[in-house]
Image (cartoon, rainbow, N blue to C red; front, side, top):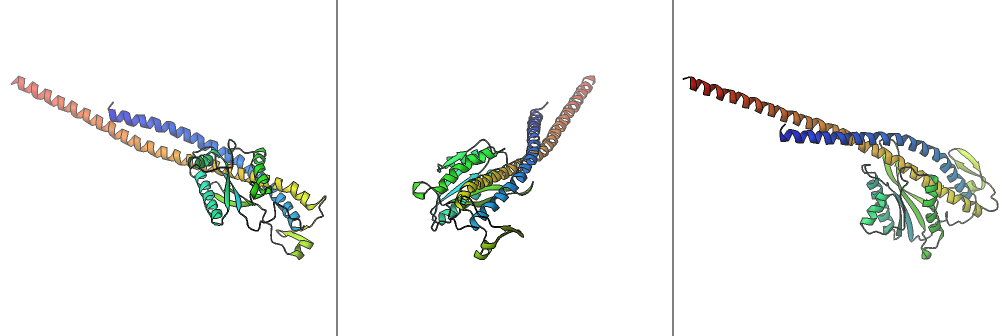
Length: 310
């Protein structure tokens, strides 16, 4: 076997092994997407109803709370960036980082100091490589987050919004994550978590009813007080929103991994076809050369034999 043919066969074997790995990773990601989608769907009703409950308290009372009151001149903002712990997901993490960079630039133009919180090793590596400060970070659970993980992430953010900026607190909390739209579409989004943005409502409407989606919701009396209710509800609101964002990000990451691995598998298949054609051409060239050598040798032997006969 010629040297060139051996090179082609070795490359075909290597690419075939890689194709098996990427195919297996594609199938694993596809199975995880289904579970992640179910978790996202299961978390939505709780987060939605909790948001309505918090909004009802805030709209239906005159209580000024640190988590719902707009600061007149905000000077400090926190940004929570959710990325992945692992790669092999195309542009998933880089797109989220770009969205966070855009938000940071926008907040800086508004003369706000930005403090960064990061979920995922990819985002942490990006900021670490550039020697950029990170207030807090969490890793190890981005593929399969739990509500306990969301509580851990939410705790320092809630503490920061309740502190004065002079003591290291913040006036706003924003979150950047990848929203799962469909198996083919995942979109990085930027949202403000705190202070809570309330639905517009006139004083007359607030005195009578709070309307949501055509459904009339009565206003309530809160005991012991609306402020105490907000103290209890708003941390749960932040935790549920962060949990939902973590689940959305996990589903998006699995979808991105599936798409990237499918593309890698398809490319490996095309490369194997190309290398097989080159290997066949090299083998045919070797065969042709061997036939030519045999024919040439036979012709030379025949000429030598004819010369000796004369």
